[in-house]
Length: 358
View 1 (cartoon, rainbow, N blue to C red):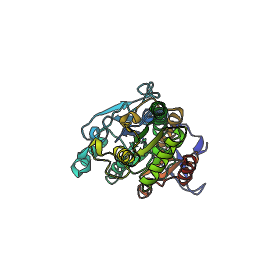
View 2 (view 1 turned 60 degrees about the vertical axis):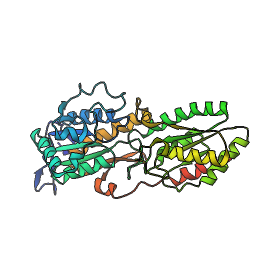
View 3 (view 1 turned 180 degrees about the vertical axis):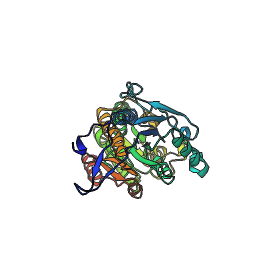
View 4 (view 1 turned 60 degrees about the horizontal axis):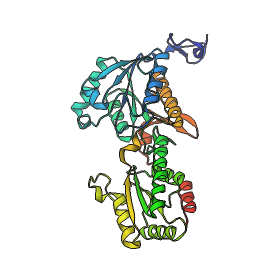
């Protein structure tokens, strides 16, 4: 029987130089999964797929509560098919998530590694964004085998077309913009809508295109406020008598600034008011963008990526990120991905400019 025909219960025998020497590739038997950083719709679907595929490959699975904090503080539970049986449709992550400054220290990482070894975990899947992946690489430096699963509504991870949660967030923003446009039209106002996106404008760009915004401002492109005012004024001078401006939180300032009235949206709105005298209001969508039941696209993507992560650990193909490129699921070197920067889709930028022209 060929190696590809062996049942999952048997360790694969792989032959090198057929008919000569053979060697055994010892498959992993115990793996873990953790969600870290900001939550994103579809994370539960990824956990479910990872757990079920791991079990099918006869690997035991442990789930870590509260991200790397839980890994340090031994918040670890066994997962099986039943435990993940009713989470596919739920938003957020049932394993919870948290920030953990202690994990950035050598002492914190040592505690995490000790707990991984205590439970016999040979590999760990990490769902999250770039910060979570840097944590995964830190564990790799301690000899832990890791695989990254990209999960963030910002879609700011290089080497993958989409991240888990992005599609749901875009739909959430578009639904909100549809409602905001109704009141903007009724009162003949301009609304500036701020969406998430510190360094990547994909959420603003795609929701602006799909929502028919008159102006879209993203961190990758220096804003031309005079052009913003020209478009807003022209939109009001025409029959629409209103305008919707979508701005990413990272435009023109410090997104970590917690002063509400110094946010990107308020700066843009104040400039429009001063220059055009048009009644301009601000809506900051905030954390509503992270919530909600994942869309079909996010459920499918998360299921594919979660299953592939389990296979990667089983194959001992680690230090990788599972990704989607042109509809295909791939494994990309994690360090390579983090060394690059996500680039804005020029086609979308040009299309947005053409379709928003007034």
